[in-house]
Amino acid sequence: MTLPVNPLLSRATWMHNGDIRPYVFVRPENKIDAPGTRHKLDWFQYEPIYKNPLDLHELPFAEAIYQIEWKSFGGQDLAIPRWVFYDCAAMPGFVAGFAGRTEKLPKKVLDILGYSTEHEWCPISLFIITPTMHRGEWVAFDLCSINSMLPKEEQFHGLGFLSKAFGLWYANVQQCSGMTQWGSPALKLHSHYGHLEIIGSYAPLHTHATTMTYRCEVNTDCWEKFFTREPDLAFLEKYGPTEFQINPADQASMKSLQNKIQNQEGPFYLSAGEIAQKGLKDPLTVYRLKQG
Image (cartoon, rainbow, N blue to C red; front, top):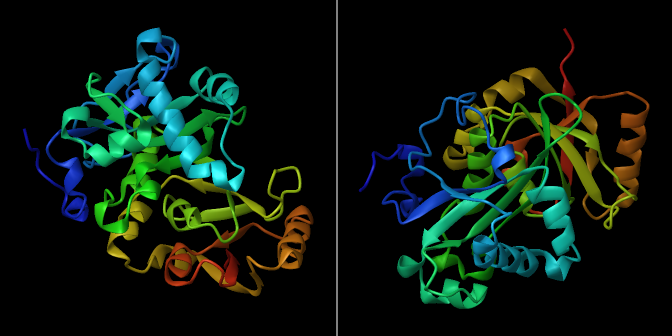
């Protein structure tokens, strides 16, 4: 059965016939009350597939999730060990993404993941988010998809962005924090879920010190601009450029901004529109709230 399509998602043709659906991989106690009610959105119309990580029958599905994660991040020394996935994601948090009906997925996808056709559904993306002690705030710490292993012409349009969007929408997330590396293509996705505040510009506690830590109030108006590429007039009205920039190739610029954050000279923000237009290694303007 094909459901009505939001025009914004017209290029994401894989979403529209029910052969690829969102999945929710959480233990029963962590199921979301009244899912998808905080943010008014008509993007995700198919009922999610539910998987229980404590059920041994779901191990093949979990193994495919591991394959996506390891093959996406292993080369960057960012892949998470199995115990971290279990202890820090499946047990306390919320794991979601999209899964394809195995018999309808390209054979290449199944071969990459080592997945058997005997299983009805095969995961093709992964998003992990965990609630924090700060009421209403969740930390996102993993987002990846099969797209990173496929040539561009065979990719599922918008899969990574829509995987995080689904998780934030379904779990009714008010405020989302997370981490990504300066110069990473992931920043082009993460900057579109709400106005992106930099709460840390340098992180020597992390495996990669050139990691930025961000926070945003989830705002679905910003999601639309990921697809339309329209200017975010609300951002430009609220925030103005400062005299300094972050250079992804210059740790001194990261440390300088980190000191300003610690001196409470912020808050500081990045423009999703500028990030979308610039190259990954280009310097980025730092913004702050306009006065008056």
